[in-house]
Length: 164
Image (cartoon, rainbow, N blue to C red; front, top):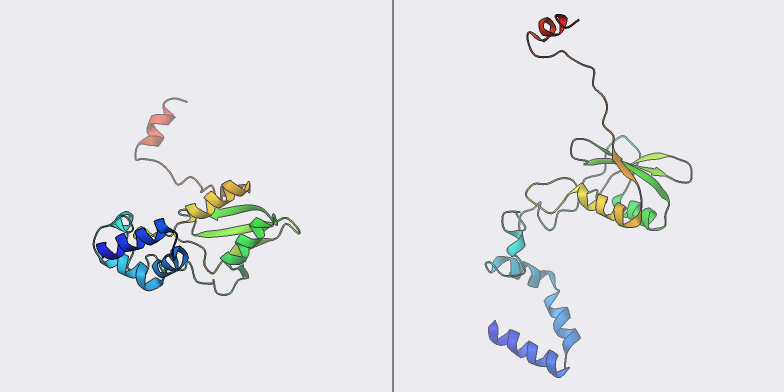
């Protein structure tokens, strides 16, 4: 492997066959081999995140929700790029469920198939979506709903009653 790398480096420096070598390194087989050969600069960031796991680098995001209208994540990204999205609402706690509010008709539609879900052992996270929205200037929020007060700690009523 070291001899191949140095020979390839010599070819690149000489200006010969650089595109062919780059194409050879970008094959899925080469990527999988890099992940299997121990710790190296290409996989060291994956340690502890399950990069070779089924939910690792090859994870394609959420499945399409059943029973409701939704927009595939790839279509959502195209709409963000063409400035058709007014804002996005993420549903707590992790933002795995999100709704795009469209500029044209103020329609609220679920972002479905392919939406990055929060995965502690992989690279999938709604935070990537938030970063894209930040970069494109699209506002977003978490839609927290206020829950009714259900009482406090035992004895709280007695301590506040004496203050009145």
